Amino acid sequence: MARTVKAKEKIHPFWGACDHAPPRQLGGYELHQVSLRVLSAKGLTALAERIADHYLDPTSFRVVAGGEALARVLEARLPSLAEDAMAKRDRAGDIGELLGVEWLRQHLPAGWEVCSTLRWKESIRPRRGEDIVAICWTATPVGLLKGEAKAAEIISSTTVEGARARLDQDHGWPAPFTIDFLVEKLEKDGRLDEAQRLFDERFVNQPRPRDPGCTHLLFLFSVDDPTPHILTHGLVPAGNVHHQIAAVLLAADYERISGDGFRRCTMTNAGGRWRAHMLALARVEGMTAADRR
Image 1 (cartoon, rainbow, N blue to C red):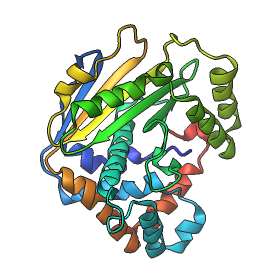
Image 2 (image 1 turned 180 degrees about the vertical axis):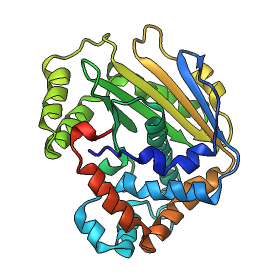
Image 3 (image 1 turned 90 degrees about the horizontal axis):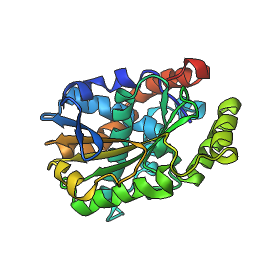
């Protein structure tokens, strides 16, 4: 589990080109609407340079291998457009999760750790479990966030309804196997105190089903505005005790973001530019837990 200190700065050219409407209340959600009218080359490059970090840990042997090898490794982690009929849809799903994670890193206050969940994929196919997971270490008991991210040129009401249903599973908390996986990752990363704390607060002293403490994120990335579907098919159930956030990213350049972002990423890596980025990232992830965001 890694926490990237400078993620905000690295992707700023992408989010800085967006229009961010003031948050408002809608159907029980704190709604954030973001629109990107034109995707600049600088913004696309900033996004592409973040993609690799979402799939690959900055481990030393990959850094030493250099750009072309890193590009091949990344391609192996992505659904093949030449061989897989569902690859385009699956890549769009990944970019939705990636953008949801990056949006959270811009939005959440200090104390939150947003996990790089795409690194957890067991194969190139979509994985089970929550799309987005975050932990607030400054809350007592520890705060958690579970998110569902959906990406399509047109997001249907059925898709929004399904995402809402997944947020409500397990009494609105991340699935127990997700929590256990987080504990295991923390332990492997040498963060034993945090692993013990999360384990104790979720498995030893279990919260009651109606206890608050989890935040839900519904992240929608599309060309056509899916916001009306939130009111018809994504309403927060009565009696829900968890904080609700909905973020809608509208982009006329949806195809460039979901397609060219991956192509630019592998081209950048093959050109060797990612090596310096990964070296810097490895140094950041070697910082102590107290220094990390």
